[in-house]
Image 1 (cartoon, chains in turn brown, yellow):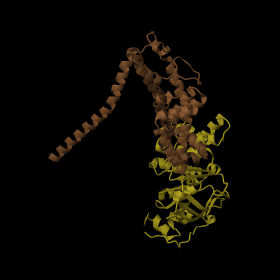
Image 2 (image 1 turned 120 degrees about the vertical axis):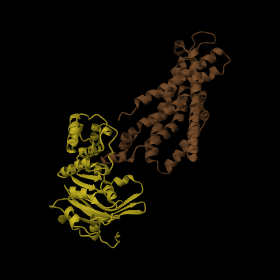
Image 3 (image 1 turned 180 degrees about the horizontal axis):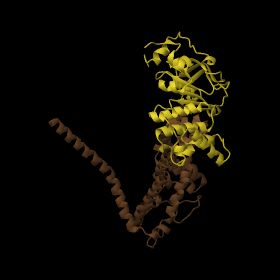
Image 4 (image 1 turned 60 degrees about the vertical axis):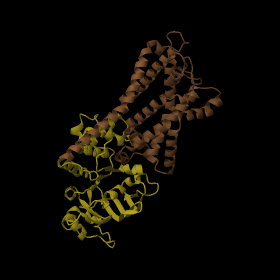
Length: 277
Length: 274
C-alpha cells in the first residue's frame, strides 16, 4: 500500500513538473507577443500603414515603403531559394542514397548553420561590390540563399515520409520515375513541403543582418529592384537604435506589423494546403 | 520439418500437361536466380505460365514467392542492391534484356499489392492515373468511359458511382483493394500480378475479390501469391509451391492439393509444416 501511494505521489510531482516546464516554454512566447501587441497597438494607425517615413517631428509618418519592401524582398527571395531548395530536397530523398547525396546533405547542413551576417557579407562581395550599389536583387539573393538549405532539408524529411507503397503503385502502372517523383511523391508531400517553406519564409522575413550589406534601406517607396529597398526589419533596427521616443514607438508598431505579416502568411498557407484527401 | 537439399532438381509438370487445355505460354521463366545483395533469394526457378488462367504461388513465409512475383514486372528494380540472373520471357520477349523498356513492361503487367495503396486523390483520379500518364485516352469522355469500365470490371462501380470525386481513402479496406484492382485494369494489361490481395480483408471482402479473380481470368493472365491454401484451391487453375527460394512443384491445382508429385509439397499442403 505504501509503495503504491509513494508511486502515485512521484507520478503527480513529475506531471506537475513537466506541465510547469511546458508553461514556461510558452510563457516566453506569450510575454513577447503581449509586449509587442501592447506596445504596437499604442502607436499603430491607418496612416502608419499607408504613409512613407517622414522627418522626425512631422505627423503621419509611416512604414508603407518598408512593408512593400519586405514583401518584395521575401517574395523574390522565395522565387530564388524555393525551387532550388525543393528540387534539392527531392533529389536528396529520392536519389540521394549515394556519396554525392551524403556530401550534399553535409554541405546543406553546414549552410543552415552559417550565420546570416556571413551570408550578407558574401552577397555583398559577389553582387553589391561588382554592381557598385546596394540593391533589392542583392537582398533577395541573400534571403534566397538562406531559405534554400532550410527548404531542402524540410522537403527531404517530408518526402521520406511518403510511403514506399505509393511509389510502387505508380511505378506498377507504367509511370516513369520522374513522373512518380513529381506527380505522386512530391504531391503527396506537398502539405509538409509547404509548411517547411513557410518556416523558411518566417525565418528570413525576420532577418536584418543579411539585408544590412545588400538591400540596405530607402526612405521612400520604390519597386526598382536595382535600387536599395526598405524592409521592416531594417526599419525596426534603425528606429529602435535611435534616440527619439517617437521612433521607438514606431519600432514597436513596425514589429507588430511584421509579426502579423508572418502570422498571416502562415495561416494562409495552412489554409491553402490543408488536406483535401 | 524436412529440409530440401540442393540436390533436388526442380521438376515441373510441363505446361501442356498442367494446363486444362492447350494455351499459349504467356510467361516463360528459365533458370532465374535472384539476389538481395549477397543473399540469394531465388534458386534456379523455371516455370511457364499459360495465358488466361490463374496461377497461384503458395509456400511458407519467406520462401520467395513475393520476390518471384515482383521479378515478373521488374518491381524489384526499385530495391537497391538486387540482382537477377536467368531469363524471363513475356510474350516471347526477354524483359531483362538490355534496352528492354521497363515502363512498357509495367503497362503490360499490372500489379495489385498486399496492402491496398490508393493515391491520396479522388476515386476517379486513382483509376484515371494510369490512363493519363500513358496518354491512353484522347478525350475527357473517353477517359470517363474507361474509368467506368474499369470500376465495373472490378465490381466496385455500383458502390462508388455517386461519389467518384470523393477521396479514395474514405473507402473501406475491401473497397480500396478493389479500387487498386480497377486502377490496374484501367490500362488494360495482359497480365495481372496479385500479391496476397486479400490478406488484409475480412471474409466477405475476400470472397468478392475471389469472385472478381474468377471473372477476370477470361481476359487476363493472373498470377496470385497467397498464404492461404484454401484460397489457392478456390481461385487457381495451376499452383506452384515454393520453399526456401526454390520452386518445388508446379501442377494443376487439383492435383497439387490431392496427389502432389513431391513429398515436400504433400507435407506442406497437409499441414505437416509451414
